[in-house]
Length: 274
Image (cartoon, rainbow, N blue to C red; front, side, top):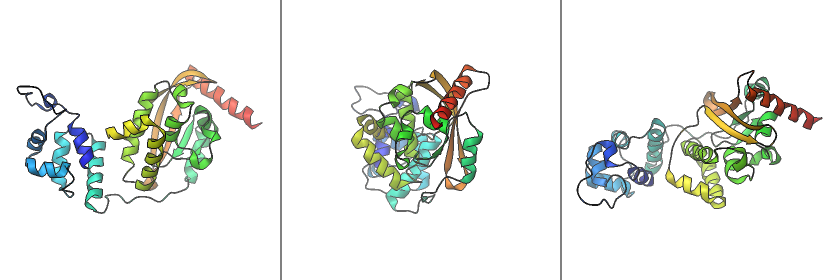
């Protein structure tokens, strides 16, 4: 919690919150502690104790005020509350979930949406199931053992990822920002994945230290695929009930060149099966 607040304080300038810069050079990046404390309506001493880790149980009202002062998004605000629960030893607002197999209904959906590539993911993006097009869209993912398949691991560690994702930097940032949101739901799996990727990838380690927090939602992803070429696909993320499994779906409108490319991708998977 202290580290998160310190990093976020350093990333918001006085002008963004209506404060004058004042005379002379500012040696502190972003807001000073006293400026943030004033914006949040708490004493400088109290905020300093929070940021130094000496105060581990600030009230929700204080945390809400800090979130407003730092202009945190809803995802970031929820993350701050979760970090505070952990720091204080309070019962998490949502209990961590044990690993669950993919639900039968989601497995059926994987077949129903073909030729759209689709995956069933857990909170840390372990691939619980995927249709053939899903495995083919990320070349090499299907070559890994089932227990190793994880879209974040793929993004940072598979040599094909930096070519397949046309805007790899954006995909990588989004992966790490989503992983921060999963710390409450799956603290042990997140810690294990973070330890692995931080050791293996300097890019991941640097992004993780930024503490960006953003849940994965729909958007577009550009690909440079070795079989179907360059294309941009819409993606949707559907959350399935209380077990927090998600369906990630890439799709294109029928009649478009992108949809034709997905049909071709599906044909390559059928040929591989025969």
